[in-house]
Image (cartoon, rainbow, N blue to C red; front, side):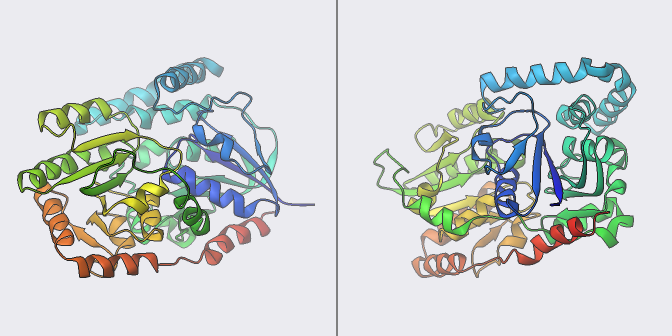
Length: 403
């Protein structure tokens, strides 16, 4: 009888962790029975699920959580979770305490509180699994820890734990209930173990997976830039969130324009910060120079057609966008932060710089002014390889030893 795995995910939106999940599911398909439960019951990548994966959600909305329709759907999901089984009443002390702690720190992150609501107000699964996997922090981890029966449990960590706004009190020490913990990078592991030092003996790095052949194939298909622009193209791929520090990129573009550089900076991605970023772009007079293109179905031709790829973010786990840029041989500039510095060797396959407008501007001008360096970095980036056999073994051994 084949083993069974349950994967739990917060959403299936078009983002790095979701993309990595699809690749992992594709590699496991056929070797075991795979169920998937998506807490939010929403996301545009649902049509990309491997056919052998059984989606448990009774209803599923394929609209993006970042679209107008998607936000309405999301609000409805949260409201239903609040009233189901009296979740809102039961969690009232937890929500008040969490909100108060956030107010004391000067930054309210409602999503961190709502994941507990979605977990406790979610579907109750009667089946017992050999292995249950929480593929993301927050709701997925709470749900697997508290509401799933399984012989073994594992959780993935994709972010700088403290920087992302999580605390042990907020999580109710949920990670102590897992048999294995899989940060996606060494530095992410170090940051996580600062919060959960007693979990060191069951924590191991499990890299985000990408499909190199698929990326190369998709990059050759039609698509990409259609504006007929003949100057330098700079590209960034990522959701429009505070984490991605787009105001720094906008100010860097203003400095580049003031220096006389003829260039356009394009951003592929959508998010809640769009209006604020559009306002800043207008204030800087960059309406034709810094272009928010939204999410696209196939981003890979854009990578191939760009002159520079810039990933100036506040913090990362292990960026899928950087990995994609490397596969497609881009000249890469990234901020010297958690996650980014583990993916790029400064001066060998990319440039790391301080997260400031002037530092980003200087790095862009340096690379554009040195064709030999740019060519060397592009060639080195395209040669990078990651073997995933050891990572997969971490999961399959856990499954095989499940009682």
